Length: 225
Image (cartoon, rainbow, N blue to C red):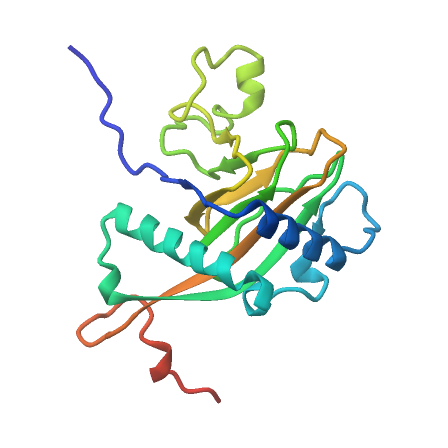
């Protein structure tokens, strides 16, 4: 008998947030008010580079970020962490509007610990998200686990064990939570309806750092200079 022992899996947490339809529409309208025409029509509109990088400070978004905070704690609890010892901070938050044919290219958020994508408005063919790894633990030859090798039929059974990029199709109202260091990108929006998502970077610190050599100490103990 033979079997795989799968080690060191990336766990992306997904959860449906319950938003009132009227509230959801209100937030969509507010984001579309922020949007401005883009010079690069292939790229989506990003609120953080357009002066709207702290959505959690906007009164209209307060209830949403309360729900998101609960989801973040649910993620870390599900991982097996003790939330009583941790403090969570929204660092930045912004909206993204992806219109027909627009996408977001592969990137990671190296300045934070956790990130999320919440799909405020998304049609069936509005485009999902890709998660990637630069070096797949199972890739014993460089370039072996690329999508092109699947197309060339080198990979017979594509999946998490044999691809360095995996596609996830979220639904409207879903939040996806993952480590900020994770490479990710989006598929193009193939509809005439805008895909509207909200993202944020989150920093996690210890509430009490005495005796700990690693992890960030409480922000109250920092000193600006």
